[in-house]
Image (cartoon, rainbow, N blue to C red; front, side, top):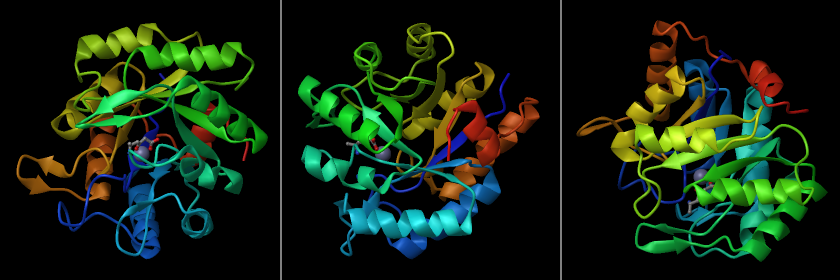
Length: 270
Ligand code: KMH
Ligand code: ZN
């Protein structure tokens, strides 16, 4: 089995400081959280940024600051979000791509998202794919429901994203695919030969899905974007969530990938 890649989703767009004081929202806090999760075993940080009022933002300059500082102070793979927040325009969501981050997320389909709709229509997918290709950014396909894998593979068939393919199964978003072992197995079966996958369980599903990711040979995403609790009623830090997954994986005799090992597994060229 490959060593385990742990992605830390540090910020997200939905959680607020009122939900948890541990949520990093300023550049300073996001960089500090990145350093802490690196020490705890993460090799990728999935980044969103917030404006000075703590609201979700896709501002290029805010991303530039965060990326530059994380890259200066750690060896982490920095993966920016192009999901942003529900309701943002495509232009807004694509802002960080011209910074040529090492990786970025790409959601390949529209899905209900709680009481909202996370829009990713077919024309928009092509537009995102073109922008990724123009700036040489490697995608992580964000899969909230099973049809999104077919949509990603359709882009590949059209000639986008030649080379290694990596998917993140985001499971348990209300309105999207429930986080069950059966659903995870079904998702895995849809992947082409050689593709790699990560699983991110939402809320109380984070830990059980992470354990399945470890034992089934996938990779794992945890962090406050997806879940703010260590256990029922007890708030977590990003580092605590990463540290627990690393510890469980080591107990199961599966080593943890460093950022450079992660680059090799995902065939990233820095
Ligand atoms: N905030 C969600 C609407 C991503 O980062 O690419 C989308 C999201 C996915 O978080
Ligand atoms: Zn995200």
